[in-house]
Amino acid sequence: MGRFDTTRWSVVLRARGEPAEARAALETLCRTYRPPVLAYVRNHVFVRDNAEDLTQAFFARFLEQAWYADADPERGRFRSFLLTALKRFLIDASAEARTLKRGGAFRFDSLDDAGAISTGETPEHTFQREWARAVLAAAFARLREEAEHAGKLALFERLSEFLAEAPDEADYARAAADLNLRRNTLAVAVHRLRRRLRDLVREELAETTADPGDLEAELRALREALGTVLR
Image (cartoon, rainbow, N blue to C red):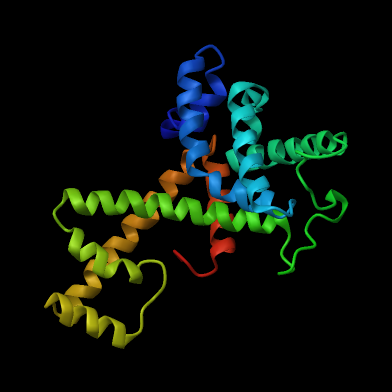
């Protein structure tokens, strides 16, 4: 298994007897992937504040009640596990809310009609897209840190807009002029940054999978969610 033996999610899957280690790993994952959970919850509640509260409550229960203890290493994608846990949590929260006669209840859309949102996008698609964005954002943050440590932060910030989407010639020309670089030199710098970004995206995904097969599946899902990004 190699590197997959030491990823955060793989550690969690095996760390039933090491609660401190498991919780630290899970807190990192939950903090990183809060945006897709919040986006999914917002498709089920009318009030924005309720969505924020529910998201906070979900992660609190996920950690405090050790829901991850029932995770199956054979189905080791953290994305899938988290979404399943979230769906169950919302069903339970909706049932609890309906028992309140007045005041204090979360206001849900009908879960029977889940996915009937204004954009025509299902909550699952919203979750997948926001998950992909969170992965990309985490990789970008790591790439920025590397550039800063290498003393190349200014170059990174000027070229960062070219990393996820291919620029046109006019954009390249302006950037080359701004940086006082030749066009070919600029192109090489962008190519290297893109390659490193792809590597970091893979590393981020590896943190949420249990084996190489799951990693490749998650990478395909990310590319589908983000279109041409990182191809």
